[in-house]
Length: 154
Ligand SMILES: [Zn+2]
Image (cartoon, rainbow, N blue to C red; front, side):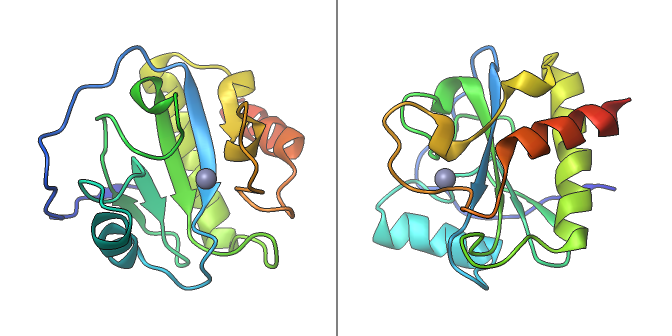
């Protein structure tokens, strides 16, 4: 599996990540949003530099690079020390595709090795303090996510 490089134009220079403490899981909460549409949305509607996630996983499992190994804009207070992985879809209503899930496990495993992380450091966005939204979706059981990540690593 591989990470697909994108050539999104960001408005501000990238900043290096600090010591990565977490992987934070998100959904796009929009059923068919692509990485490119997300980039446009974050830049033009949110007024950010560009796509806020470090990586974005399409329905077909393609892993698109967003901010990569640079500071993102996806989890207030945690952007400097986490990798934000977004799977596209509205997981309040639908589950990730098998292709997305396979890619997510691979990418999480890769990031965990790169940053020396353990499964308990994989968090859903809604598990962060002060977060009111359901992200990464009501259908996603984060204990199950962590145990599948652990299983994948073994
Ligand atoms: Zn989120």
